[in-house]
Amino acid sequence: MAKSTPKSLLFALLLANLVFLVLGQGTQFITGECSSDADCASGCCGFNTGKCAGAIVAQERDGGCGFGDGQPNRNAADALVGNNGNSGNDGNNGNNGNNGAGGQAQVTPGSQFITGSCSSDADCASGCCGFNTGKCAGAIVAQERDGGCGFGDGQPNDNAAQALRGNKRRFAFTS
Image (spheres, one colour):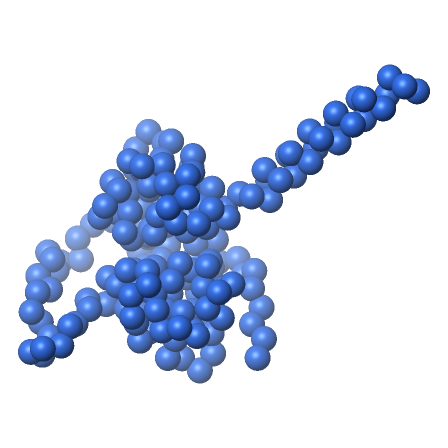
């Protein structure tokens, strides 16, 4: 009997570590260390840095997503913008400068960084304008901190979070 107690305790500790590892997948916040896209709540582990990043921002500043893979990817970015895997130029070639009225700062739709002011989800690179704050937010974080996405709409949404998770709804909104 005395021999089985240490083995049982060892087994329980190993099982607890495995449970914590599984529960922690996909929960790392932006700028947190990661070893793959699956570690990050945003679905993007920066290819050059090994830190969780916003999917769109990583394409511009971090060489893409997919740290630990042989080549960078834009899977999370495509999911956010509904690109269905078609990467490429939208024909704009970056010619967005000075398109607004004089004296007003205009933001190109879909280009506002996290914490930047927004009036709808379409303004944000993350695809999520915090429902309670009117600031761009990470799609998963906004569900917990900002009452969801969809600032300016009548109801909050989790559209960007669903896109990151492959259209699997995990959040229920209550009034």
